[in-house]
Picture 1 (cartoon, rainbow over the protein chains, first blue to last red):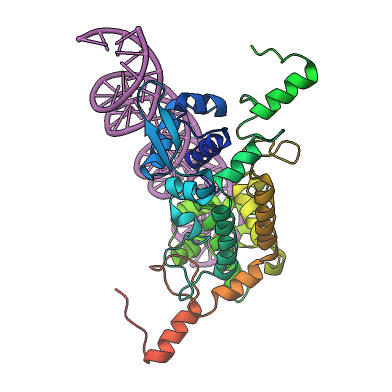
Picture 2 (spheres, rainbow over the protein chains, first blue to last red):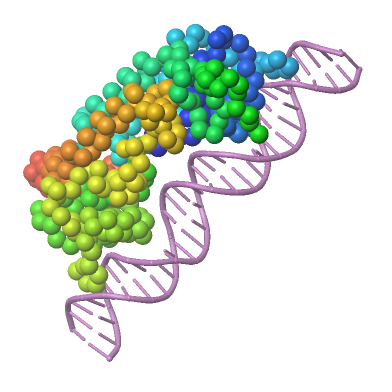
Length: 167
Length: 167
DNA sequence: ATTTATTCAGACAAAATACTCTTAATACAA
DNA sequence: TTGTATTAAGAGTATTTTGTCTGAATAAAT
């Protein structure tokens, strides 16, 4: 996979926070529950994001984490780099150290152009945009067995008359 | 990294074979030596390629492995899929199972277009092309501390009068 | 003050990946 | 027909990644 699992979790959590109506502290418990991720593991992952100043955290009752900047000012690339490091956008396809114009691998030209497209995509996708999309009907952030998003819940209520019972 | 190490080794070996003047059986010893890869590990990796009918193998003295089809008829994607599986070209950016038009993640649209570019690149890059490039001066297939490729050796001899001594 | 809810830090365990080694099977050569 | 060079198969080890757990630090509420 392109992104490590840690990285995916971090991205999902960041998008989840950006999808909320207001940027308030949310407990990692809540995020982990909504996204079906191990709480303790997510805690570790999000520490990377707070250390990178993408999140701010607050301890104690009603504490949690929140975006440290406007969602429109945090890119997908910011989150990815904070967790997996910036190498994704620099690395050789074959992982050869020093692969570059002076000393390229046979796929260098092709790969650098792919890579910069990828980087461009990730730097131009903001949490704001991703958060908006996450709120749309039939869009989901995590595994199918995770709780529905607000839009889906609302739709389910409206169409059925009463919400489906969950065990 | 996008590709597993096993996969990179397999790709490197395949390109190495395609870079040779004729498609003859080459011992895995030789390949592993030239590419600075553990012999036993490479053996395992290449077994995937022979099972996938991309390589043919022959045991006993003067045995080895060789491309099972013309280098122009084997794509980078063929090799990648034989080792890492075809999921690379199908997977969701976040690894969500079932992510698709009906049930997308927030990055679905952007990612599918990137992914298909990647797939197109890998299916259109043939071992023939990559092998040719590997034979060019200052192009290398593996780590810098691996032996030089034929073109580099030749150039070194011609420019210096005698080859550089290596410890 | 004490309890409670939270993040932070780090030890530990499990799983996946990468790598090593040994033995078997095969085929050539003397 | 015995030895030798090679791939095949699979057991075993090491490293990295993923995940779990426990305790400390912090801050609010009672």
